[in-house]
Length: 274
Image 1 (tube, rainbow, N blue to C red):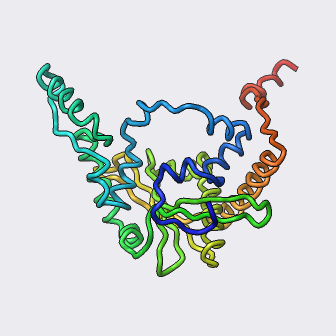
Image 2: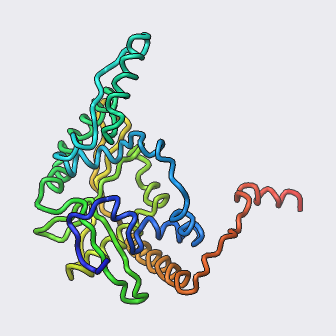
Image 3: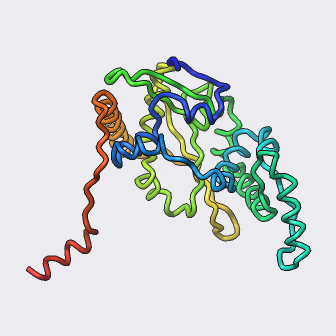
């Protein structure tokens, strides 16, 4: 894969292809052996086929014309009756060979409300309706390590340098914790670097956060940008992880035995016995 931008690369080809991605840097940050394990470990295909509301929401917001090709809306079945259960099983059997994800009636209803909630937020709507490219893949060569790097932004705008990323959250009040837990600040840094390397401009990065939990009868939607201090930390971690990956790849030494400690609260209790 040569450095450049690919607009028609499938999601499967992107994830199975060459280059180091942000999610792989997350594995490196835990331990390099985790990166190697994930590349080799088998996946449970039955679990993968289960509905991923995040994927469905992404598709509905970013590629609405593709939604009916990937997802099927099931009719409502009365699961309290034997006939209802039988009808549901018959329906699932009839669509099982179509290679599509089935949404039950409640999931479909909820997904529709979440989409309308997003479009009711003026900034989110502007970012989603602005001219841009969705699910395009950008590859570049890191100047310091010469490693092939890759990103796949949910969307980037064509008339102004802005990257848009959609995050489904269980509870909007926890989104700041998710930044640390899922290293969104590293994603921010890595995606900006990929964009800058290809286009020669340093972009803004906007998170559209969509809650799947009701608040006063609505699904909250917010649009965020990271604090500059967190952006700086993200850049530092990104560089550290990429350098570690390079060293492991060149030496073909990936570790494998990690050190673990008891919880901090338990270790503090040790002082009681001194």
